[in-house]
Length: 284
Image (cartoon, rainbow, N blue to C red; front, side, top):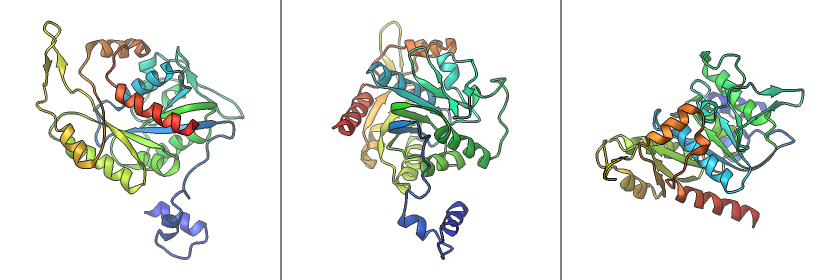
């Protein structure tokens, strides 16, 4: 990879290959702002778009916030940011010589997104990959997150410039893979899983979105995409299933109103338990 070769050359490596980088896999990691103390960084990823990464990122953040943890969300989906809208944040982030100040949700979750730096949130971000990746790095290095127990990163789909930058530059502790029940689930999950494996990032587990619709009259679960291949895929890869989210009109309404912090359900109980265990191990 060209970036790796340049880094090797800059550090005095005499080889054109990436051997120097392989010997020191942390050589690309960026340090966060000197005033920050971030205990755990969790990436939320998928192999394709439209499966609900932002929804899962927001839910996990809210649930951990409700547990009493200090939580932040880094919206790394620069061309399609949706986190501020979900929380009803429309004001612009403030900056100073020290850095960029994240905005807070009503319940104190700290958020940074490109939409918080634009005068018009509907203005398209028409940038090439390197510029997008650079902004995401700045959200890690220049934002004054303060003391956080968890920083959740909502990544754009796929395995392009921005996800690669996050995997290489930010010290991820784990990732959560988000998928849907369609026939493509195995390929989608494996793309994200294989990228994480190649980058030596552990996978916390899989969340399936749009798993079913619950009939409002009889309560029956209707699987509109057919039988899910989630359990089979998870077993083949040795991954835990962290939760299955239905198509829930109530959650959709809360998102549209910017009041997502009001949601109430237990869809991601297993994910929260695993995150709590991570936190306990760190404190222990």
